[in-house]
Length: 308
Image (cartoon, rainbow, N blue to C red):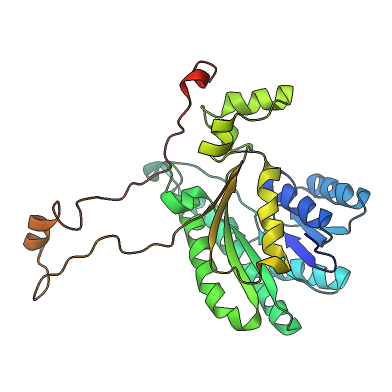
């Protein structure tokens, strides 16, 4: 995939998935603005890209404010002449169950994930519309935003909101030839290492270089951060010109298209519904097959269970 001449901004690109996105975009030929709050991490990514013959600059700042978003876009334009791709990856975690989550826990996560995505996408969209040559907004979501996850009220809400923004902006930016998609990644990161079933497998792979087992890569769709980066490169390319408004999952050997919410079951009552008629018909009517919620627990094959 050739991204020569394109300019990308990647937020939260100092490590993990963000770094994989930045390095993959650069390897495909794009100039990259590397954003992170860690000056050393950002510098290391820029150094790695330039050492490989690519072009990169860093902006060290926390996303969320309009000022930082404008600075990211302005840096892309000043250093490389334009902006073609915005990847909103930056994020933090403040996990707590509902009754223990503080206002600060909630606001901090919403501020980085949801507001940060909004301000960065808005700044990029304004410039892309001015340029008149289209563009790509690639918003990073999560399975937690699709299904919910225990202890992640703030994170799940933000990630669900990001998918909703992708669908909305895909409509609003269609005439400007700016596509907007949400990526739903699953990869071995510091966060997934905290999951008891995954931790020993990830640790063994890091220690020995042994590939992840097939059940993990296929059934759970979990692999390395590099496994995810190909989707971001595709969505940044001209080959994805017809792809917009989608939530696309990727991880390990698995690529998936997430469905949009839709009515699953419908019933009608002449004159409308009362609480009593809903109660009387619920279990045999629209509530006969309720939806699941939460991310399903991993299923470890019997032959691997003793080592997990």
